[in-house]
Image (cartoon, rainbow, N blue to C red; front, side):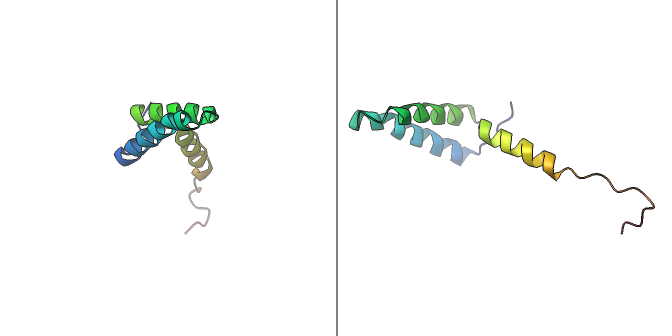
Length: 75
């Protein structure tokens, strides 16, 4: 698993995750944000975002074009 997050984004994810993790203490009905906070902290700590990995895989597949045949009049 290769890192796909830069340092600044990792720090931002960790801080946003800590904020979301602390938010249910203020508002008790915000439990789903607690889980999102844990996911942000985990991805920031590891340095890998599965969503970014999936999107880059899909764009790499789409960007792959067939090679031009020699002598086919391609300039």
